[in-house]
Amino acid sequence: YGALYNWYTVNTGMLCPVGWHVPTYDESWTLANFLGGEISAGGLIKEKGTVHWASPNTGATNQSGFTALPGGARNTDGNFGVAGYGLYWWTSTEIDAVMSRLNYVLYNDSAFNLGANEKQFGASVRCIRNE
Image 1 (cartoon, helix red, strand yellow):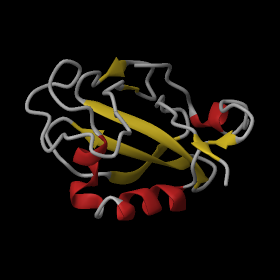
Image 2 (cartoon, helix red, strand yellow):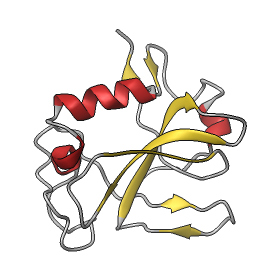
Image 3 (cartoon, one colour):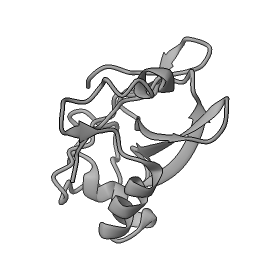
Image 4 (spheres, one colour):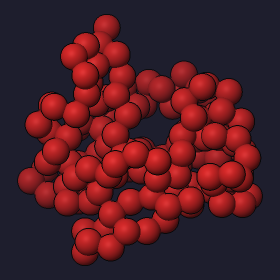
């Protein structure tokens, strides 16, 4: 599923190759809206089936080609969880000294969730190409 990073590592700007970057919160909104909105866009980015995702993997079609895999997360207490049940991935957008924006999709929903978590939280990263 890939590595999990805290937001402080995301903020270094060193996770993506040259010519790529961790998307902003606004860029995540753009993706969700392009795919028809928050309610169903999650299904369009999730890998189809239940090889990696827990059943029922609601709405998963991967029509976008994003192939979201459920890498789980590292909680702020240091425990790992939800592998197979959810994908959480950072944006580069900071809220305040403690919180930053992230996105997530879950096995039992087709939503593309735009949320927030503490910067210590461990989540995946997806890079996008610079324009």
